[in-house]
Structure formats: structure tokens, C-alpha cells
Length: 407
Image (cartoon, rainbow, N blue to C red; front, side, top):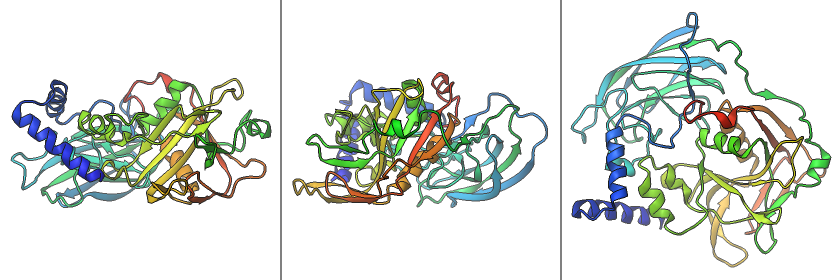
């Protein structure tokens, strides 16, 4: 059903453009994106931080990698440590049979067809050279282009690739020279701590273990807390590549699919309202492959607690991973099926947010009588080890401008 909507939207936009009836705002968006070509689209994020200054000293290592047009990702074998600079320079080009122009390291100019392409890094053009540090399941790709100097906050194995669909086969080669430099003086990695002030039995006595639907039926488990201001909370999610979810169904599909060539808005398909502290979620966030958003997406709901922790704002959240559909036991309708191992989604939240450089401390707390197994409000089952993730955001997280920190 969702793919049918997508095809109809594409046909509608193409017809409107041809007939000259396309809304002015959409035409302007398409023109802006085509003109931007090799640049990032508004609101998009990389997974590493553009370095504020060139790295000092000599590189720890230097390596050259050859990328051919039929490759998506290539592991370099380079293990990047948190805080290290990844400096890369690229030469070469690739050519796609269905394109008039050759793609250079920064990629082809974005066009209408990019609305329906699934690219590893949606903010850059097809054929751009991109990088990734860490686990493929959680690491956010970043643009290398002709040259980059970025800081990796999470660390892990470095992979480089070409921003193309898995079935793409381009002709040509890129040569990528990678140099790794030590962290800047004063760099602070995320601290894994055994305890945090205020995270105790008294606090958890005020936090319901589960969220619920409007009728009061218990649903997903509360499995993470965030300590920090509202601005800092929003910054860490957007920097990590999460997208704020629309709260209203009205016009969501056309808004999400048409407004952004990067397809990030496409993730904003509404999630149902659930309740905690007597009200529905303050924010919903999603992370997924855009075309598969209806069937599968990482998503969470988050509420501002009506009380602080150690004098700071507390956010209480429930994260689950949609993996398909199942029958809603309440009304025999169709609803999303979640991965029953909800700890995987809790860990996904941890990995994506701590990779931003905006989290200062992390701990896991086991409440008294921890929840180990239960059913959602729609009848689906889930299980957990009972631990709740706690993330403390860095003091300066809310003050960082877009692009100044690794997404």
C-alpha cells in the first residue's frame, strides 16, 4: 500500500512538472536541490564532525584505497579511535550508463530521480565518495567528496564507498588517500560510568515502568532516560540522523515525500500517540531506510518528566524496532510488529547518540523488580534484561550549530 502511494506521488509530481501545474514551493525545492548538486540538503547530517582546524603533527598512518564503480562499501582495515581525524583526498570519476555526465568524488547533481533512489548518504549526489566509521548497522555515513577532514567520536573500522544503490554498476575508479591523525589536545570521549547522581531507587519510584494507550492498556517498556535541556535533546537526535516524526496524519505523505529531496522527511510517517505521565509523547523520533519506513523503522517516543533529576531536565523514553505487521489484539486491525528483543533497540539508541560527541556520560541502571517479559498494548510480546539506558548530554550540546558536530 505504501509503495503504491509512493508511485502515485512520483507520477503526480512528474505530471505536475510537465503540465506546469506543480506548486511553486515544490518547483523551488527541486530547483534548489538540483542547483545544490554536490552539497548537503537542508537538515541533513553527517556522522562525523567536520574538523574545526587542521590536525597537528604527523599522521598516524597513511593508506591508499582504490574504489571501482561496481563497489558499494570497501573495508580499509583501518581502526579509527575516538577523537582521531580522518583526512581523505580523492581523485577519479565513474560513469553510469543512464547518465550523460560523469560523476566526480562529490557526486552527480541531484535530480528528480533521486526522490526514488535509496542512497547510503541521502544528502549527497549519486556517485559521491563516502565514508563510515564503525558498525554498518548503526554508523551514519559521511561525505568524503574530493577532500574531507572529520573527527570520529565513536571509533571503529573505517569503510569507504560510493554513494549508489546496491544494483548500480558504474565504470571507472576512484583513488582515495586516507590519513589518520591523533585526537586534538583536550578531546574527551564519552565516559561509561557505574552511577550518576540522582539515578536511584527514589527516581524510579516516580517513573512508570511502561507507557500505555489512551484506554490505559500497558504498552512498551520505558528503556532509556536522557538528562539535558530540550534544545540539547533535539540536537543529539538530529545530529545522530534521527528524524522528528509528524504528529498529524494530514498531508503527511505528500509533505514528507515531496518536500525533501533527501527523503529524510519521508521518515516522518506518523506514529500512534501513546501515554506517560498522563499525556501523549512530547516527541517521536525515527531512523530507517526511507522506502521501508512503513514496514520497518527504528523509532521511539519521549516525554519530559514532570520533575528534574539532580537539578536538570529529565527525558523518559521508550524505543522499539518495527519489523513488520501483525494483528492488533484490541480490534483485529493491522498494527506494527516490534522486534521482541527490545534491548537491541535500546542499544541502537545508545550507539547512534553516543557517536555524536554530544553525550558526556553513559550508564545502565537496573531498577528493583526489573521488567523481563510482557506484552504491548496491541498484544505483541517482548523481553528484556530489565536495564534502563541513561545518557547525560554534554553541557555545550544545545549551543552547537548544525554541522559543527558529528551527526
